Length: 236
Image (cartoon, rainbow, N blue to C red; front, side, top):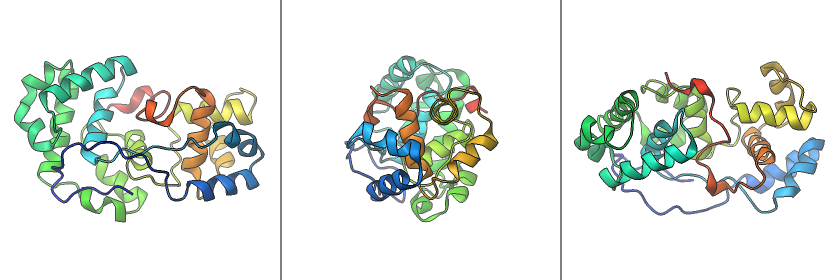
């Protein structure tokens, strides 16, 4: 599992693709317990969740991508990396609001990115300890940063910390996946989703990932930073 460095200042490294250590065990257990997973999982062969190794970069990119199309998010992110090639908290703070806004970020998103960088620089978040903290403790720290709500924090748990048992009930892709695969397309409540997911524990992340893929079979794990479709209310 990738771990953050103490000072949060590590440069962005090349993505190392690895299979989460629990993935094969989770697949076997889910296929034994759940008739839908038994049909769904084999459709995607050896594909698996791909994590993002640097906590600051993962969160910054998530903030950049909120409430805009993937194409627009990619364009803004590339401009930000031109301004801040190492994408460290210090470099982002040095760039400042004017340079970040010139990357195509709104005033609010610029403020969010700077607040994120300030939290990391001042060590008001314990990034070096997140891999040892439980899910809710990590979420509690992350939501103190401007622009990060529970959904963004849960995506971080999945894609950076590779936590195996995350159920992002605010994610429309998960709810749609449950609707299509378990309820023949009928509307699904949060209560319905919890009931279905009870059979997945402690591998709810894995089941969620396969439901995302069921909605977009052409997508590979590396093609998306998060899930198909962020909820509209991710910005706070």
